[in-house]
Image (cartoon, rainbow, N blue to C red; front, side, top):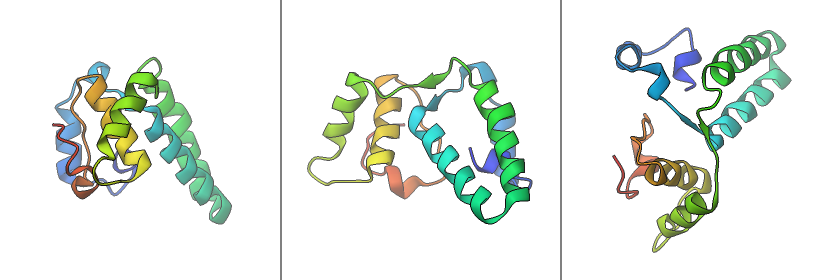
Length: 121
């Protein structure tokens, strides 16, 4: 998501995103948490950049994904717990992977190492 809000978007990411049907895309609530945290951190050190990112998050991401932000519920929590055994992993990454698994969705990420071993597509 961060890449899509960047003026320095990778051409491969842009080409991939152009092929997708926007109404079929969803976000994990954990992704929203990560985006908000990132915007807050940038706002603290660069108010102009923070304002640009705040507008992007509120007017594009949250508006465009209204009704398509998937919560962490009991099913996601149970699937997440299973991803920590036998080897613990990042809680946020496990929650994102579990959300995709529970909802039978493809998980799109450029951070492949963070999701290795989650056995999801």
